[in-house]
Every structure is written in structure tokens, then in C-alpha cells.
Length: 306
Image (cartoon, rainbow, N blue to C red):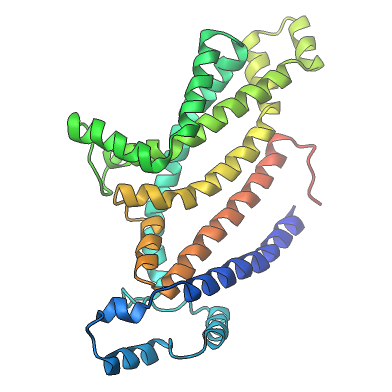
């Protein structure tokens, strides 16, 4: 197991390198000049040239790229053009908010999907099953940029129950967590139902029933655990996508996380900050995928990684 973890960690190096290289090239070749954004179009050419030289933007793109790689190897992730702070410090300040939102969305998804998926499988073709199918299609079909403002209009403006935006207590987390976790809940509900239905048809389940075991023990101890492997796969992928999906949700609710910081960095053409934000999201994906593989071995001891 230790050898497998070390090997996976080494494989993250080319992955992150490829992501950072692609982002560096894309953001440097798209239209927009960070110097004009910072000084304004009315600034003199002398001031623009001086600032461009101070930021190192007067150098050829590939020279800037190799300088960036050299600083990255030394642990220097650059300084934000806009905030005038080390990009790493800005990420670490915003990271707890993004983790809090992602965990809140995950909790919402699990609270909805686990009982609904189990009831749908146990009561196949019932009204509960049909209703869960409708909710799953409804949840997948609703994009975050539509659901978020809709929840704000209903629960914040019309009813006045929950805050509109910002990060504070648990009430500030409810609407963005529902917005981010709804589509994940829809996918997990159908996956739990499908996987559990296949497991309930296995011979060992029939044997357990023939022995007279209570139905709850058969369902939760034998069937559900063996049905979790495909669910964990989807859960890991979906949780990784929460980090990227939080960009829209954090912008809608003014949530001070990495997603909103990424949008601010892109708008201001803050090259170092964009690169570090994307690197953090990529590392989040890699870490979640590694954690998912380790959970496999806990669920099914037959799985070996050596």
C-alpha cells in the first residue's frame, strides 16, 4: 500500500506540470493586458512600460515560462499582480472556505441520495422510485447559475429565511451547499439505486434470506456495502468536480473561496494567481482520486495495490 501511495504521488508531478503549462500558455495568449487593467487606458506609455518591466511582462512568453518553472521548483509560486501578495498566501486564506462549501455540498448530496437511493431500490417501480427518478432528472437538468439565483429569490428575498450572500454561520452555508450539491445528489441517487438492485439479485443475498436473516441486516450489512464500490467511484469524481464547480456557486453567493478568487484573477489578468488557483484545483482532483482508491481497499479487502 505504501509503495502504491508513493507511486501515485510521483505521478501527480507530470499531471500538475501539464495543467500549469496549459494554463500558462492559454492565459498569456488570450486578449487582454494586465498592465492596462491595473493602470487604466489613460495612463502614459512610460508608466505602462515601467510597470510591464517590473512585472516581467516585457520578456518573451517562453522566457517568462521558464522563469516561472524555475521559481516553481524553488517553491516560489509568484506574487499576485492585483493584490500585491504572494499567491500561495492568498490561496491558503481562501482554501478553508472552499473546503467548507465542498463538504457542505457533499453532506447535502449524501443526505438526499443515500436514503432515496435505498428506498428506490427496495421499493422498485413504486411511487418513491418514480419520484426519485423525477428528482434525479430535475437535479441534473438544473445548472448552478440558474438554481442559485432561484434559491436566493425564494428563500432570501421573498421569505427572508436565509442570508443572500457571504460567509458566516451555518445559515450562510445552506443555500450555496444546496446549489452545489443538488446535481451530485441526483447522480448519486440513481447510482445507489442501480448498484443496489444488481447486488440484491446476487446468490449470497438469496442465501442470507433463506437462512432467515432479518431484512435490515441483509440490506445494510451485506447488500449495501458490496454495492458501494461503483458509488464510491462516482462520489470521488463528483467531489473532485465540486472544487471546479464551486467557481460559479461562489461567485453567485459571494463566497470567499478559491472559485471566486479564480474569477477575480481571470478578470484582472492576474497571471500568477490564476496559475496557482488552477494548480490548487488540479491537486484537489488528484488527492480525491487517490483517497477514492484507498477507500476501495477499506470497502473490499480483496482489492490489493501492491
